[in-house]
Every structure is written in C-alpha cells, then in structure tokens.
Length: 357
Image (cartoon, rainbow, N blue to C red; front, side, top):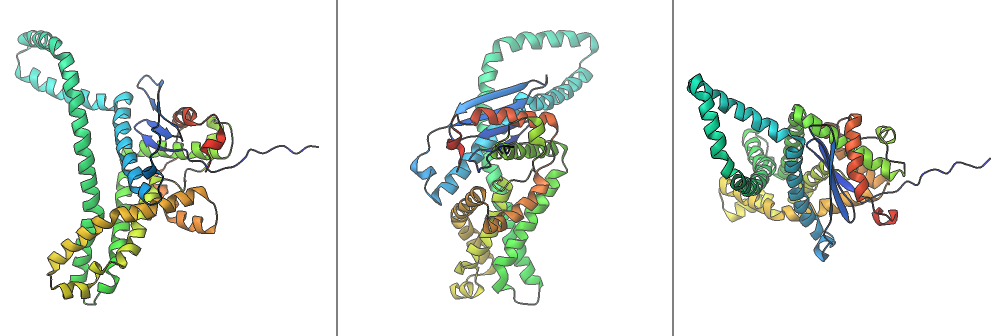
C-alpha cells in the first residue's frame, strides 16, 4: 500500500498586518488588502510592489528603511480599512447626530425644516470642493499622526525609562550606576507589556487582535502547504516568529546590550565630563535616539533569521516575542479567517519557489 504524500512544509517571505475589520498581506511582488464592508461583503484591493533597491536588501541598512516603510504603509491601509469598513462613518454619524440635536434644540420646530432645506441647497455646489479638501486634510492628518506616533514611542520607550531609572537611582541608597542599562531595559519591557495589556482591554483592539491571529494562522497554513480553507486555517496556532510584536520586543532586548557598552551610560564618564544629572540624562536620551537605527538594524536581521530557520537558537530568540503575542493575538472567528484568506491569495506568486526563503 502506497504511502500518502504529505504537503511540503516551508518558510515563506509572505507577511501581513491586521487592519480595521480586515487584513493586509505582502508577498514578494504583490500586496493585497481584504476588508469586511458594512453589507458583509468583502472588499479586496491588490497592488504591485515596487522593485526593491539595493538599500532594501543590504543587511542592517534594510532594517530601518523597511521598518519605516512598513509603518507608513500600515498606517495608510489602517486608515483606508476604517473608511471601507464603515467604522469612521459611524463615528462621523455620531458626531453629526450630536450637532444636529444641538441645532434642533436651539432652532424652533417650525423653522427647522427651512434650515435643513437651506443647508442642503448650500451644500450641493461645495460637495466636490469639500471632497478635495478632505483628501488633502486626510493626507496632512496622516503625516501629523505619524510624527506624533513616533514622538509618543520615543517618549514612552526612551525618555520615560531614562527618567524613571534616574528617579530609582536617586531613591535607592545603593549605587545602581553599573546596572543602569539593565534597569532601563527592564523598565522599557514592563512599559511595553503594560501598554499592550491596556490596549487588549479595548473592544476595537480586541477585534484587531483577532484579525492579527487570523493573519498568523493563514500564513502558517500556507507554510504547511495546505489548501487555504477556513477549516484548514482554523487548526493552526496564532503565534508567529516573524510578528511585529516579536520584533519590537527584540528591539527592546537588543537595546539593553547596545546601550550597556555606550560610555554615556557610565556615571564615571559623566563625572569626567563634569555635567549635572539633568544634562547627563539629556545626553543619554540623545545618544539613544542616534543609536536607534543600529538597534533596529540588528533586530531586523535577527527576526529575519528567526523566521527563516528553525533550530534551538532561533527558538530562543523567538520565545519571548511568541509569549507576548498572547496579548496581541486572539482566536479569530471564521469570518475573520475568511478575510485573511482573501488577502493572502492574491499575493502568492505563481511559482511557489519565489515565496520561499
């Protein structure tokens, strides 16, 4: 009796991101997003990915460039998914209802119909102009939000840990200066975990994390060579070594090692410079921001290796990040898995070898 041929298991370069009521997938040459519309149908958008330049492939350099590019693309498609899913419309509708109620409360009932008619007539010639204005405004808001997001990340994971560590060092009678980088690193990781835990309590984020789980399960199903069906995808785990959550955690861990060897973290060095505690903290923060691209570059290479190979070393690298994914991924519903499948199918190359590491 002939043995049944098993599906080939492989590592793939296909990756994705959870969106609002949807999933975005990126393949070697194509990208796609699938979003559940208010009428329960699936909106699918595909696009060709730009050919990678030398700096997108160069080790360590590619880490920062690809990370920033993925952040901007992710933010762009999260916004778009919010519009397609009707989430932003619901928020706008709620605002309009409140404004409408305020107006009707102030305007006498007899005159309210006249006000509505006048408003409708005045709005018609301005509709196209408003659409253009809204498009420009949305682009501006996206840029501002991105800058604010980066600023918040710097404040939360660089400035705040430095100040907290300085405060701890001032309170504790023992000299903690030799362990300063380690303490800061632990503070960063605690802040990161608390932040993720708090976001996981929000209803909107819970659904996002479910789609995150659907994305991981679908990629695992594809990597195991099985047909992409809801039944097949459902059985796979929701924790993936190439996840963005694992990457951020790895970046925080690598920062402990890198910042430890920087002289700026040494109290002896600060004493030699003859600077005050406040100036010392400012120097530390500036130095950490300057060296951040180096840390991101190292972390990117490690997360790539962890996603490409399966051995004891890569399992050790992946283990902490996989544990934290218990906060950022949730078990998805079948309709969410359906969305993830719809997003991944268009990006799978005709030749499967093109998707393998």
